Image 1 (cartoon, rainbow, N blue to C red):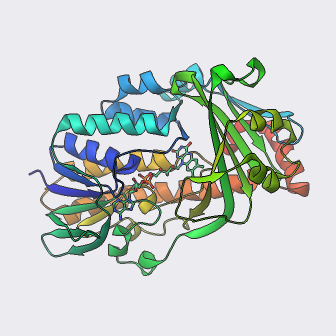
Image 2 (image 1 turned 180 degrees about the horizontal axis):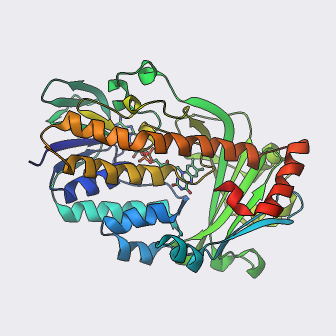
Length: 387
Ligand code: FAD
């Protein structure tokens, strides 16, 4: 029997969950704190594990239209620009994994998901609803917004990101603990490729490594735009909850010093910079950190991670598909049992990806002898060292 599910948070995780669940015939209402459903201007890399799930959700055609198809990932030294390793993507990924490696603009992916959820028409999409409180009973969940509005359903999916309110429903000691500051800051810039000199345009993923920083550049919007992200070990500036702080090339350069010399021309060509400070949580330690009774978490609400494996949104999308599968097995009316199946199926995978993302940060930002060893290993083993 279909369930009535409330999804808190209308980001990539929340909309993916809404789409997957509505395809399972559940009634799904989504509650988003912002006045409009939208995403910030940044890029997302998606490996075949993620594009396969989006195809499963009926988005293959839409995805092909918005995606850039990088032909390779090339890792190089941030100071010297010397190539360290190259991983073929393009046809190599499709042949090896049966699904493509895509780079998209977050807003394009978000719009694609939103359109698909709207087209299902199996629930309401509520904006300007900052959920402040969640109450659960044996049969129901009740959420209320800071504007004193309230809604009831049979189950709650917490897709409310890093600072999740839904997370407080978990039956684990860490439920009310805040995320941890990583001491890393990400700067991002985006530019239309047509306005760049030819030498700065990109059709592949470039990664520049350390010391104490790394940078990534890749095309989005079917290759028409370039997304550049620089992450440096730098004291947090501004509001840790704000993903979209105004910043500048000067602030970025103050954090990177001369370490990013091979990148200078690209950094200077960006029309502007936005910044956000990075937070994460330790890898999940049990299924109980993903679900409790009628509440299940997806994406960053459950397992926020540093973006050094480019899989945070990917794990949210995998969660969404797995959640719908768990509710599709057995008696959907038994929501707690389905959510337990979901959490059991997902927590170890998410924990592993969180740990690998952290490990990649150490490799990317290595200094001294460790850095020399890393460069040697990358030249020998190639970019699969970062898989
Ligand atoms: P969010 O995107 O945080 O969405 C949460 C939503 O819930 C928001 O819309 C928010 O407004 C809403 N909300 C929050 N609280 C409430 C409330 N109380 N009531 C109602 N609504 C609420 N991942 C990849 O897969 N590939 C990449 O290449 C990649 N690159 C990244 C680069 C950087 C620099 C960073 C920082 C992250 C990157 N990620 C990447 C990770 C990815 O951005 C996140 O993992 C992903 O956005 C998580 O999605 P989410 O829907 O779980 O959470």
